[in-house]
Image (tube, rainbow, N blue to C red; front, side, top):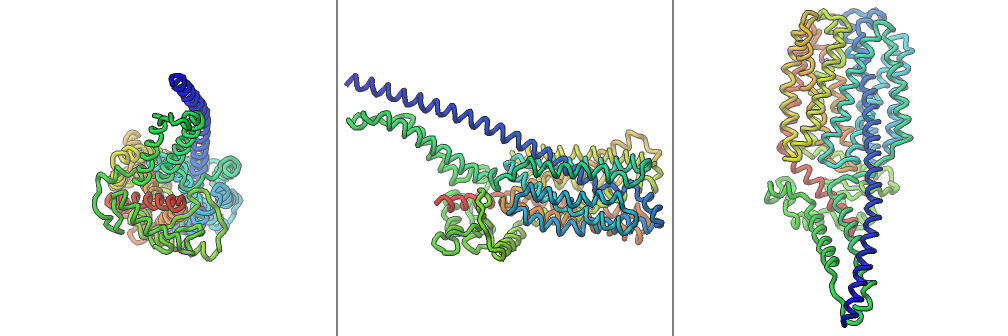
Length: 590
């Protein structure tokens, strides 16, 4: 009997050594895989951010030299503001808005790296062609086509970022890309403002377009399209469960093999490691069912106000399965898109979120996409994110289109001094993006509703320094005062962007994000395109640029109010997305 116990002990030790060795090798492989994943993520964010810088630099190449272009085409002051300020800006965004929607829809089912490269190539090819334009008609056409890349690229970028980072990191990474927009504004204004008077207003278009085309080529050659939904909480939880189950089964197999003889003699003893592994799997299963939403559960009780979904995990599992997983229905059996319970108008679930690709009937695909659109528009946080865009972009129409020329022509500055103000504003905008990204991450960790308060309050407060920039800055203003007002205005303008974009990523399903950002960008395009036209009308009706700009800046107040309202809905909308993903994975795994 003693010999048998000794043999059993040796066998168990041998089994533990084998498992330990296997676990060590697996850990090394996992560490290498994680390091490679981090490297790819950093490269993707860097390249997308650089491309964003160049796209937004392109957008701002005309404004420092409006008066010089007007002189070449023999426009008077009103024609300058209307044709070069309003009409071209409108054309830029008239093409950009439908491009945004079309490309955003395609982003949910095609390779986004290839689509991004094509989108940038079309727009920046037109930017390059602007260098060779000799008439106003040619300039108008080139600028309109350039809007295709700016309108179409952003939905792709934020769709990809949503699949590269978890919810708690999205404020920060949105800030990084958002900083690219601020740097692009400053770069475009700087290149055009400093080089335009010396080398002519066309040269900046050549300088910006060629690097942008190179970036597009690098994207398609070096960046892989990430799996849709791979960083969602529900998906990560399920993957962790499967990994622990595999480890559990492997440990049991080794222990069972080594102890087979002893077990046959009736001397089999339950291994402590087996009990521990089994307990671990049970805990993970419970965690998956609860979807790791304890941070919501402790703040909410009772039934979901909008759709009757309980915040209790067991009730969620029963109710959501009944709603979404009618496996016996012939339309649900093998269909790629699980749209609620084969027709529910709450969620659109797709195998794209786990990388499963199937051929679609074109008609059915676009029918599902239309239902997805109505699903998006029924989400309060999405509606508020869309609504804040148009009024918030009206002041940006002033900044991007008129401000440089206004400071030079109406406030007595030289073009170089006016460009310096825009650059200082751009630095402030970058700081605001950093505040929005880091502050958003910090507040999100405390309560996922708090970032909305930061976004809304800073948008409203940002109107104050911008008002002083419009009405008080001149060539005689001290440098320190100019810097303080310009940077403060930029900070107020920059905080909201990263927060609202991260919020939109968090309240939409992975297979809806391309479409969501397409609609989001369309609303922004509405503000950017009609903003300068609206301001041009105000200039004509109010008798000058200054009173028109003072009215336009109030768009940030409306924008701030919409962002503050997100506070009341965002927590529930994020919860609904995670529950929907949990049900999708449960249905697929059943």
